[in-house]
Image (cartoon, rainbow, N blue to C red; front, side):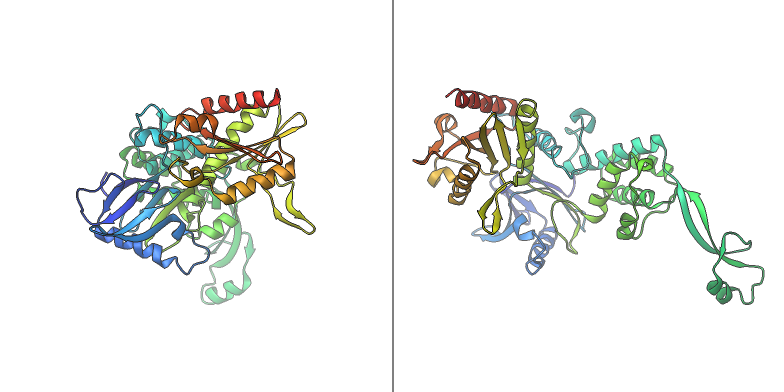
Length: 434
């Protein structure tokens, strides 16, 4: 697709049509590169912005300026129409890794996020083999909106003010005098009209109209055009914040929640970041540490939650009790009988080539505090599996102290997460038998 570029976490973007580059370097047209660079630099003085966490700017000998992605993944669209898709760096044991496979796993992981507006999907129906991530998100919104229109758009009484030839409702005396001093046949009145032109429908129509311009997929464009027919009597929202503030959440609005969540993402860039800038038309980005944490936590909760107590993001203890300060918040607390097992996720690639395999000292201090405060039987640190991990590391990476703090590292296979859960189950069974 023209002006559509796919990179992975920690890959780099270079300026202009450079050739002979390694696979993790992607050339971007000079104008688009300059706009992206300008956006990142413009965020420097904005304490709310995460742009410097998103990408870094450096210079490489023989290449020039380089923009490198960090651990935010998702989509960026520039005002000139250039789209950059950033995929997570996920490794597959069967060596058949492709962008399509990565998208499938990534979408499955996104499903676990509490604030992401879809809970079920089918890879074949979404057409992940044919669509970019951007068009997949658009299709998800289209599917939710289509279901809404099948049930029928909700109508409500909306106050209407106008200078009419008939008297109806309530006379607005001040406006009536001002406008009709020489028009005795008119009345400036306010009255209620029952129609579909309510804030929720206006926001959905505004989103459809925006996506009609942004989509490059012929099927998505056709579907949007068909949906707009159902919204023919609805005015498109022009004041998004006002209309979002006017949304009503009652029983009559069932079916609107997910489409409106998508509207917030597409119209106001309300994703998991605070990126903003004149060079960006659209940004939907996710910090992979949060996605990994949420996904693994949900899988473990479903697997063990039927027979044991599982708490995600537990906030029971503080590092200091007098006064209560520095809240401890382990990702997963698993209670098996009287025993506590804590699991914490880290989106980081470990390797024997790094000191301490790349495990940070701060993380181990954190695990030590968890163990002491919770009186935990065992701590499991969960990292993503990748092809650089030696077999002996997968089987025997563990740490223990003289005061009975035990930390084991487990590698999570994101392609076959069931096998990783089985490994955790086996370890827990062995632990509880001693």
